[in-house]
Amino acid sequence: MTPPDPSRTTVVVITRDRRDQLLHTLDRLAALPGRPPVIVVDNGSADGTPDAVARRHPDVTLLLPGRNLGAVGRTLGARRATTPYVAFSDDDSWWEPGALGRAERLLDAHPRLGLLAARIRQGDGGPDDPLGAELAASPLGRAEDLPGPQVLGFLACAAVARRTAFLEAGGYHPVVFFAGEETLLAYDLAARGWGVCHCPEVVAVHRPEGGVRAGRRAVMRRNAVLTAWLRRSPAVALRHTGALAADAVARRGGDGRDARRALREVAARLPAALRARRPLPPSVEAAARRVDRAGRPARRCGEGRRAERAGTVTSPGPVRPSS
Image (cartoon, rainbow, N blue to C red):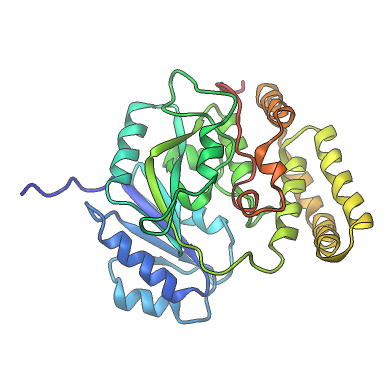
């Protein structure tokens, strides 16, 4: 029997204090055809994760930044990778057999494709995650040189990127840190002319345990405002900020607490966001406004689980590099 071709995709996994889930994910990745190289970035675990990984999976490259980098840990892993493509998993997700090979063929065949958003299966043999239907229904269609519907959002643990495109775009942004970080990366890829699209033939498996983590809704709202100040027009950024401030005043109960926490955290991070502000090229800003007018499915379910994970899911038409 001819052995499978060696993988040209490195899988980067970020983790923090979820040792048992991570070990299960690494077992699944080790069983994939071609045994893709795996890099684990440990974001400051205190549960013995690094020692457990070293014992059970000594072939895994383990990066220990010594603190919680949030989503930026994925950027650290991508910098260490030496393969042309990088797939991202979290400690509760992995890739179906054959998925990474299909992703490689799509990226080979479409040189402008910077990142593909996979179809997501909820556990082994489970149903498709409803996010996939939102991605597939992106109202702004396809580009001739891309293999699927264009999107401006995705689930980070179900994405495969061209390493050069990912690093050119700067990877994940430290001001946003974590939660809803995908939209900003999609903006930055599109601003450089890279395509981001949904490719349902590539399948990731996601098996999250437990509900929404405490404080996550507040962080999602914070990051939506910060993303607007980092990249969108002043009018859009002010609109986001005003809506959050109004909720902080008017809402009661958990929604009000989330809004007030988000507003405080926006105030603390806004100076850094303004220093790093890089407005989108006019073509991408115009496309983002078209997405806004289309209703932004993720925004409509903004209090729900899908929006908390993926941010904006619709997208512009072809976006060319800015001059």
